Length: 91
Image (tube, rainbow, N blue to C red; front, side, top):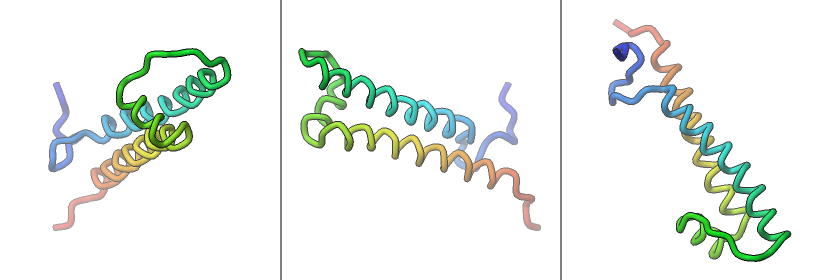
């Protein structure tokens, strides 16, 4: 059962934001490795359509940066929600 103290006013949990952000940031590292390997070895590979569009229009660095920035932003939102939760209520 979820603890009501873990929720913000909007119902989101801080650790969900932080966790998803960390996963996106880790995905950006994997994506950098995967695209570098693809560029080095050549050939064809199947990727998600969103990654393919980003890669074909923006290149490797910008594609990885999109995922890294989203990850960092989500982690920051999670930390801000945690700090907001920890503040005592002003009465």
